[in-house]
Length: 125
Image (cartoon, rainbow, N blue to C red; front, side, top):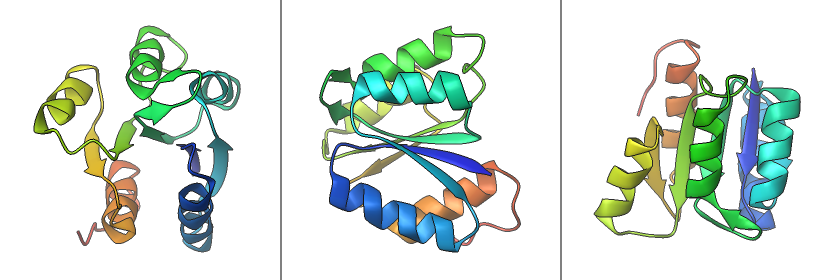
């Protein structure tokens, strides 16, 4: 299963990537909003982990564009953000996000969510 991690914090992106690769995922990365859209359209991942605050646009803009495109509309999107405002979670879900996690992330919960979304056995979160 192919996962796109769209996260401008390279340390966090590398940490998530390493964990998901050891769990058998193929990982793609993007470090800004424009790159996230290009990689998503070109590679059509099974799921996207999307940061809200990124250079070259916001994650919310990316999410809205992904959901408008026939090619990417059905890809589940998990939002990851440092913004702890509960309204941000409602906004992200309203735009089509299936999960919403705040930073620092609980990587085990994110991995369990991915496995659940992709039908890869029981989720343990």
